[in-house]
Length: 142
Image (tube, rainbow, N blue to C red):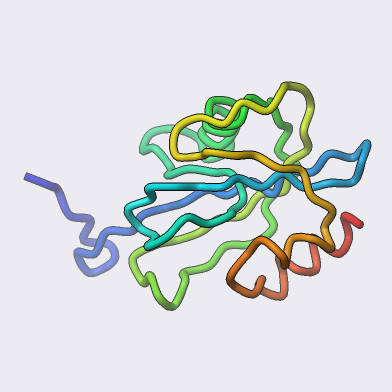
């Protein structure tokens, strides 16, 4: 039987950690093509990330999943922002700015492809508009 958290009225949230992974040498951002995500209806491009695991530090969780799903080691520079998407009221998204340290592209899990793109090109891959805070962070990476 699933234990409910009564601190938020018995509702449970899915916490998703997203890495805005930046390569300072070529000033590009890593994106991942994701397939078979039960929370999305179609294949999409997204920032690499994963669900938060209970009992682990969020940053450690994100570093590990980025390494496992992309092949890249990252340094987390800080939180960009967090939000609850209006279409998914039971989900919290936390975006982190990360710097790529080393590694080679090796998409795994639900990621079928990885691509480094110029910050100005991101809008060509994403189907949703970026929130103000995320767009400001991306603009500073150009």
